[in-house]
Length: 304
Image 1 (cartoon, rainbow, N blue to C red):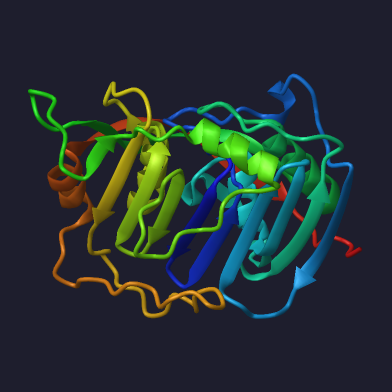
Image 2: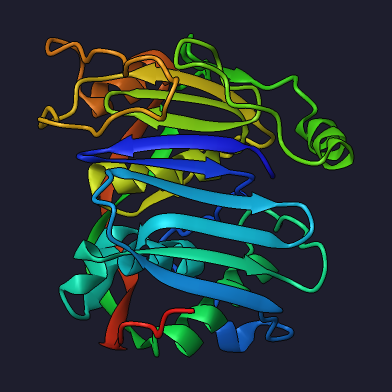
């Protein structure tokens, strides 16, 4: 779904406009580029190194097949293109994390959003761009690792007060945005998210999202693959607060004109407690094979 996402983690902040919902990972490998029904590529693409030193990362996917990435490390681009978690990437040079890049690209047609759990044309075009411009090559390896199953906590199936079935028609909002030339402006930090997800340290607000996508968010936060085993279908509105294990010392400055980032309660619940008490769900530890992406080669791109 094309909507706006604001994600702040650690020292960096990510602003994503018009981003499709990422695929659900579970403990399975993401669909490889070779498995795509076709190998779509961007019609035109510009790649330049960003030396601004800013903390914010901006990603945009807009009608007409337009894709922009500002101040993005190659490692983050790989995460988006292959829909994996940071701990699922092994190998590669250190500059994959430290060096930042600006990308402006356009497909030869409009790119529809993917269905939940399926990699779409935009992801495959990103993979082709990384292979062409960064000479990126990688392979899959599988490791037996601890994972979490996301399940309903109560035997009677009652959910928590901060997890509600969504009544918003996000498809209609997306269609209206396409007719109007783009997605709506992002709400302020204190306003709920209607369609999409906003993540700040210790705070999550999401609207019109399937729980498979919430499980993917949890994977990044708890540093394990989280598999949705709730059996709950449809889209949900989620609002949750918790205290991170390590309070960030610096989170970057908010975008120009944006209000200050909300304060973190140092005495709040852990994310595990928040999931159970606020959402009526819980994380159960188990083990499963997890696919890893091993980077064999990556080079700095020639700028244009």
